[in-house]
Length: 162
Length: 268
Image (cartoon, rainbow over all chains, first blue to last red; front, side, top):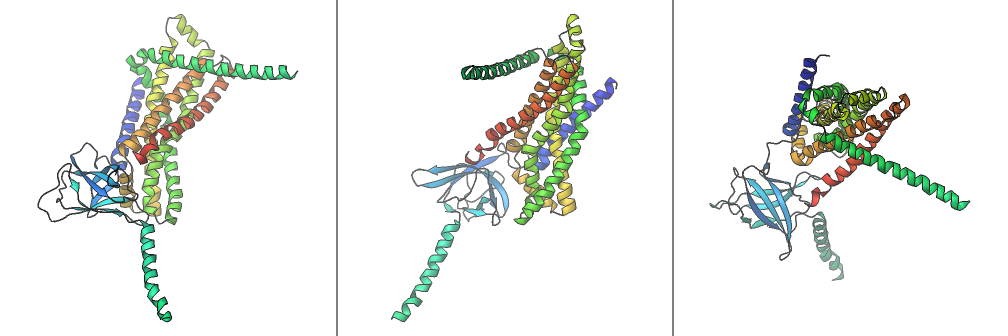
């Protein structure tokens, strides 16, 4: 095997390896979507309960991903969770936007859903969302349902005793 | 009698520990010497290029074919299981994450150890057995700089590229089986994959794993070859030891690296 053939094959090998890496980065890892260095602004929201929300979870509005959760902390004074989210600069929201914790699918991951309000002033970097709605906890939902059932049943049970 | 028995056992244990510690120390000094004296291999890059051809290009076929089949099997098995939970759209995530994080670096590393590592050991061992290394020393050529270092760098540079190609080929195989044969929606396959695979956390960590495995396998291969007794039996034993030791090293290092990389993610 002469030298230039070896060089040619090594060159092909290296190019193929780099192409594979690019394939993984662009097609599989989706480099183009919200990397932390792109233009974003940060807002915070307080939730009484965040359920299973994770750092790096998506922030969606009308089903479109507009940002990422960057930090989740516990507030020692109000006993609530402070969720920090990064929103892309191209997505501007009014100041009275509502943040909800929603679930995609039945077993799916949880995400922050934003619902725009009607205020003329837009959110700025460092603002805090005032209107929030916590995650639905299945146990609370079931117990509420059971209490309602029990409350419905009671008057009927009392009637014969009257 | 009892005391003598215990004493003999302790001595055997002690000599075995001493032997292994000495060997590890020798191997570490060998690596340090090798890195310090790899100027020739990097300056006359043609020496290294030939070894990249030998360790990398010639391993391409086995790596690409195995990657393809591993991805296809993953898609088949994953579909069977995911379908039970009504989550067959997540097939792309399953295939991509298992390949990029684990199977790509580990299986490519194991194949690399048995395809290229064993050959490196046998080659260096035979050069030593036929006294080619001594002849070089007589001509004032440092055999470590001239023979061992190019093989080491060739292996270290080839391994990450092979692992990346393995993962890419596996994802392609998963796509062929999952989307073309089984009929999972192509949009869901790619978009869920792109949403779940992170560039830094998954892909970069996979590449770091493959770099570590590449260093470990090639180090073991060149050391076993250089350290082999200069006999036919010695070379054959050294070759076997290369494959066994580097396979174990890959699996052990994989556990350590996974524990370091992927467990802290949930409570950042």
